[in-house]
Length: 239
Image 1 (cartoon, rainbow, N blue to C red):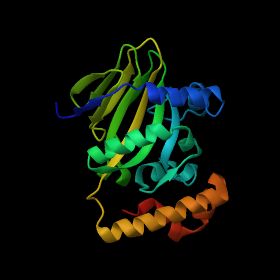
Image 2: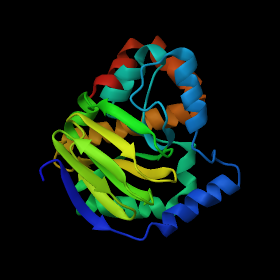
Image 3: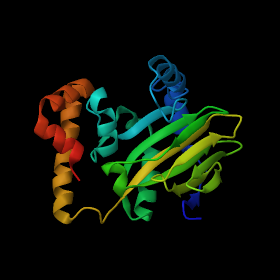
């Protein structure tokens, strides 16, 4: 198969324990916002490929505002840590080891829930961010598996499996399970993508953006970037 590659198999209990702990303590929603998202999509008629999914971002790319929602999501190459990161210390140690094994650097990380009998509609991932990065899935929960299609290929992903797949081709997902399908989705950037000089510049800018967001908050950061064309373009269009 060209569009799927099985990386490894694990016992995902330690990740599920961190997720359960965060839910029980009220830090995050039990369905990761799936019902809230579905309601919003219906009320706004927003064209979404993930109308039923619940998302919990751990590492994310910046988005300036709704006007630049897709622009930021697809082209911004800077990663920031969300407030949810602290709930998953063991998970991050594990993911960083996987990224190192794949000769890359950990990038976006999300935990995604898809309710029973629901689908992710056909789409492909485009833009500068996706251009250089590989996408992986860790199956945490799916008692009957989840059906992935990428290009002309189809694969059932089962609990405990870690997969790379070709997300730049048209792909879709069906939850075949009677319980909610929960995956970790993470991206890996090859270490060779940046030159030494580019790595230094990108690291410095990334540090500055993270500190500015922490200081101003999400809304303040968006307003600041929106008002400064140079910094907005640096954020969204840097390699």
